[in-house]
Amino acid sequence: MSTSMRMQARKQKLTFSALHHHPLSSTLYLLLSYHHLHPNSPFPGSSIPSTSKLDLPSAGNDNDNEDDEGEVAGFSLEGTASARTNILLGLRMIPKSEDLWREYVKLELGWVEGLRRRWKVLGVNIGSANNEGMDPDTLTGGEGSFGPDGEDARKSILSGQLIIHALNSALAAIAATDSNGMEFRKSLVDMLRTYPSALRSKCLEVVYADLERISAEGSDISSEARFMVLTKELYDRPYDPEKKDEGGVVLEGGELVDAIGRIGKEIRTVAKAGKGGARWLDMAGDWLVSQMELCGDNADLVRSLQILDKSSFLTSSVNTSFLSSPL
Image (cartoon, rainbow, N blue to C red; front, side, top):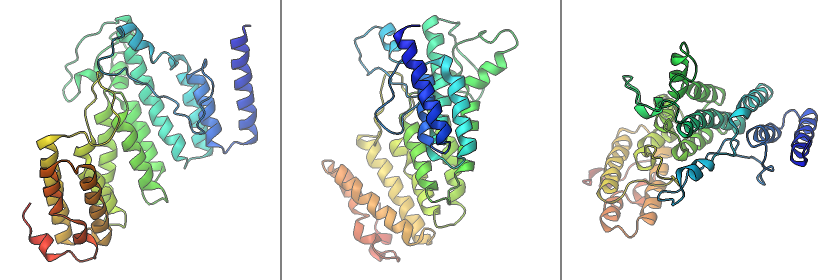
């Protein structure tokens, strides 16, 4: 047995031993999953590893395709089953673990994306798909890989059914009314917005559907859910394999000004109807001030934002001049 293999075996044994003594530690489940997915890598320095991160090459990378694809070589598809079993065991022990649920979603995303990239490298019947209602990119690759009777299974996997099931399970387990329920949903949205997968938009829609349901309930957290859905067009961008998304606002120029205008109108409409209460006004005011600070060099945008200045949101009743101002 080589030194590398002995080190891997020892690392796994030590992690199993630690997990035996601390079965309610989400960190240990994540570390063991990381070991299965990255068997040749040392444990990450962070206490909560990203178990299935797939980094894309930068746009305009001069490396050849083989080198680019090699950037994901550390993600072991063969270890996915063991990592999945380990995380699901952790979720049985700690069903309210936000870290485990988030990493479970990333694991399923990473597995599907890893399959797609492997098929691309191997040139396995890469073609086009014409399924109604499906993004062709999400069904491309691996035709025939599951045998003559496995085509439906292949399409189900590549269309994201496993990931959607994982997302729905996570959202059901971590209720919005839990102490960190809305923060958990925000963390899912932030993760999905930058995750390199053709299923990004489809997965985001699952979370947005849950947020829209929450916003219609009229509870204390409804305003937060409504605001996350309202501002999504500023931050969401379809997956582009030639770009590495870093998060943040993705619109520019006139598109950004128009989007801010639409959001401002909706803020005023909700405020006039009295649906959001003081929480809605506080969130809107803080958000508008932050946007003015970020976009200070865009005169047109700042003028649009100044119509909805912070002072209009500091009281529970809406300022009359704000409600009557044109957008």
